[in-house]
Length: 531
Image 1 (cartoon, rainbow, N blue to C red):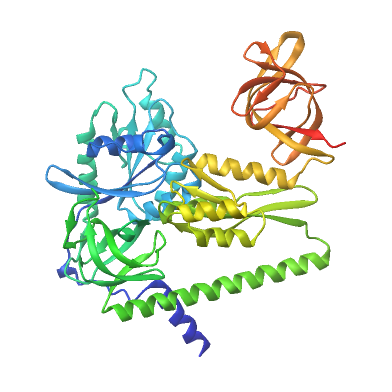
Image 2: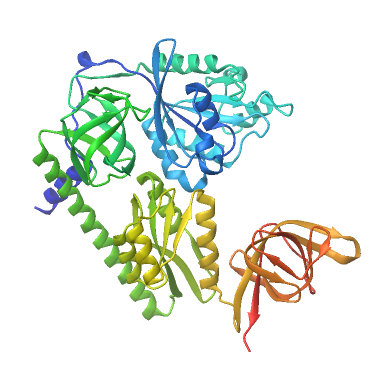
């Protein structure tokens, strides 16, 4: 009946019937640790110091852009680390890392204390039900104040040993290598308390950490094996993808293995399709079973997507006829990235963007979100909807795609830092939401600081984001999606010199006619009145 169909679909969507292991088959396994914390507090520097390689230098902007998994040894015992991004756009990936881990090292800078993403990380840990180990980093700095950090953490109900609590804590310097052994020893102590075990003598089950497309290898999925042992030749299913293991590559990207057991991060080659980060990977009896299961999952996903679309369409029609619906304007984008997790995270961050005023709202519609280079098929998708832009994040476009894009006039924008991609799209949304009446958009500047200059009044210390701004030009001041004032540029300074024009990327001081109530973050848009 209908209930049975629902139950069958739910079981297929989950994967397979996951049986519990007999306690007598369980043996100790290495701990899986996620390092979390606020941007720039030294998460990747800490992992870098632990495994003695350079990661941050290779990440654009010094920020870890995608999850990666590694294994190190401490006093002969292996420890698996999952590195998660710090930027706000990657909340889902941080939560995914937390739910995969046995414990979380919470890195807090001794000179900066608790910040928003620190609080988010604490919430992730609580939601996932995993213990925290606090690493107070940057204690080598003259401005370091570890006691303030511990006191601030207590305000979030994170009580360390020093304050009579149960949370383990180490005061470290990733840069100087101070107290790293103490931190790793506390990881192993926490692992002993948790009594981590798994059965290595069964079909493997794991979780996909990230998936990417590599030349010569096809789809490669970095997977954390949680139970059992995966071997070369095993058939498996992961989300809507399936395959047969052709190769198992270690976290160094070079070493090849014949098998990998519990708590081992391994890159699996031999997948048809690209699984989503967070998908459960399960070894199947044979290739046909794996393909059937993947096809069934894809069918369920399509049906749910279709149902969601129909529901959204009906709501739009009802709202339109009831007179309560704002005009909806869409900006379409195609997102390609180096790994599937980054493509998903950027796509989600973009779809969460929304600007509105009294008449209209602007949203982002992601047409494609995949790992790999930009191809002709991506350009073909973009060409269907006028005004679509292709965003390439940490990836390139092949020659055929670039030729096709030029011929069809479809822009391909390349980014290596997520901030830049999101800011660019937000700027385009603002133009679509509030095109200047009776004028053409010329350029904009963002207010970075507000200065009071004697009898001159407040001057907006700004940076030109795009286009140009001219002295005497028409401008409007935007705060969020609201227009505060429309006026003209009275003074325009570059350092101390009065200038006539400011170009994209330049810093400047802007004074406006009859307006000086600037706030940091305001946007000053310039436009030319049409004749």
